[in-house]
Image (spheres, rainbow, N blue to C red):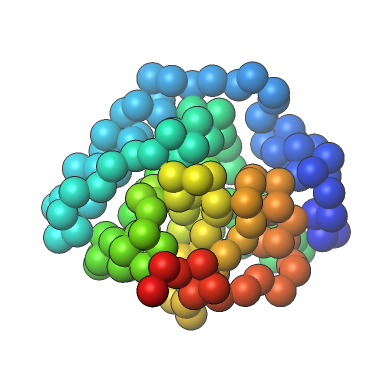
Length: 159
């Protein structure tokens, strides 16, 4: 798959995975969000709250899975999942640094990296190699993620 280079390309990529404008999976999203919040507490992270932009994204995209790029293992799963033990601490550190609530909305199945959305609708990527800023909306985020160099998130920290 070539790089996603426009909002239209992102929408086409998501459409191939089963997305369509106006898609809503409220019950599935509510269950997944509740499970993630519970798991966050059990992982030692304290209290996780879903924010409105993240909830809107999860409702619209939950359950989708799609490959991105030539690597067949490079699959994005659209579900709010903590992908490793200790993820809650990393999520909380990012939220504290940003001064905003963040919530996981998807993850890369190959390496467990998580996509997070903050309360202003910005997308971040939490990877073992660091925290990255993907963009101000889903289109910018997935254009960046598909192969563009992505900046570290620290340019958006409040400290």
